[in-house]
Amino acid sequence: MELRTPITEEVRRSLKVGQLVEITGEIYSARDAAHKRMAETLKAGGQAPISFEGNIVYYTGPTPPREGAALGSAGPTTSMRMDAFWEELLPFGLLATLGKGGRGPALRAKMKGLGAIYFMAVGGTGAFLTQHIKKAEVVAYEDLGTEAIRRLTVEKLPVIVCVDSEGHDLLEEGKAKWRRTPVGAVATSTSNGGGG
Amino acid sequence: MREITTTEITDTVKRLFQEANYYLPDDVVASIEKARTQEESPLGKDILGQILENQKIARTQQIALCQDTGTSCVFLDLGQDVHVTGGGLYDAVNEGIRQAYTTGFLRASIADHPFSSRTNTKDNTPGVIHTEIVAGDQLGITVMPKGGGCENMSQIKVLLPGAGKAGISQFICDVIEESGGNPCPPLIVGVGIGGTAEYAMYLAKKSLLRKVEETNPDPETAGFEAELLTAVNKLGLGPQAVGGTQTALAVHVETYPTHITALPVAVNLQCHSARTKHAVL
Image: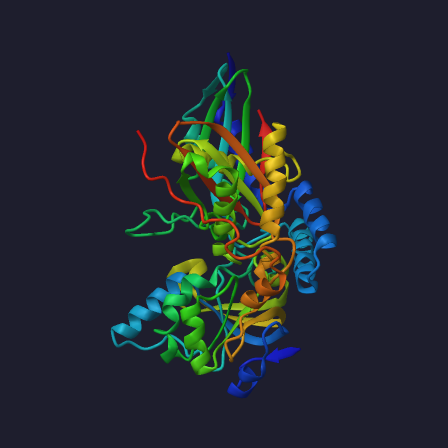
């Protein structure tokens, strides 16, 4: 289905785990360094550089663009590194995120309480994904270079609903469905106690 | 004694890193195509299709396969009859990295101090350089831009000698299961067994330089590689860990004699964007 930003709470709550979605509209890029700075700014009583209300934050740090392109390669980075910042950035309206890999169980529980959603894009396909990014403009923290916050205009950016507003997790469900070996079949390996 | 100039080395390193970042090796493409036909999960199959489409676009447009253009790992096989002229060997390698990343539209991803300033060096230097001295008068250069997603999931454990193959297999499966989608499966699983703690990890990394389908020359080790691949794929993680049968494309094992008290096992994961490039001077 096609999803146009900004997204309302109603739309956010209607999306189901595993659903294939094409995002069209404006989204924002931010990753480790920008998250750290935003969290520090908030702690110091400062203002948010932008509001993420109704928007999607894409965890990406692109390569420089060749002439004529908005960005170079721009695939998702590992989302779990941003888990620790999520709650701190809630005042910025951060309820929809996009990255790769799973989110930790503690974060998923907190997300569920607020009806937040997490999308995943296919990691390692930045050359493919950037074809769907039509415009990119730095809106904050320009000194962070690739890690600056950018407003991206995207067209039919293909993503998958990985954690929906009810807390269903695609990775947990996928593993349970496709696992062909019993859990704990082999005694867990033990570390070496010493030598001599 | 044969002379090789630092200019030749710099130019070669620059070319190899740019090509490695734009062109996924043929054997990796073939292996992902095979995985796509074998994958039973429809979503997993679609993901493998997108990965194949990605490499076509990167190749045609000469843009990086992945925005994480990695830590610049360099493996040198330096012939003992080679004399490098015109400056320092490692300086020449780092100059090649600098030129590759600053002129090739590649992302600079190296922080200058690991726990303090973490300021970007802006040219992806310094590289991580491994050198082996070998017979002959040639210089072999293999480059590997290694992404953080997979490298960060690496683990080393020194098992009890009695843990044997079952213990090794369990450890490897634990590492892969814990890492989930973070290292971007389907993976090539690099495993180093034996030696010492740091040498086991070196072997694990080095095993990733093999062609995907190339097995260990020792039949017993090759048989273990096949067993491990089956065990890993039974975990059900699949492409990007959305669930499926193709969690890994291959498991590569390298071994080395070890101390009577020890069984070191190191796992170094490689994402599907298995970028390597090799040249001989």
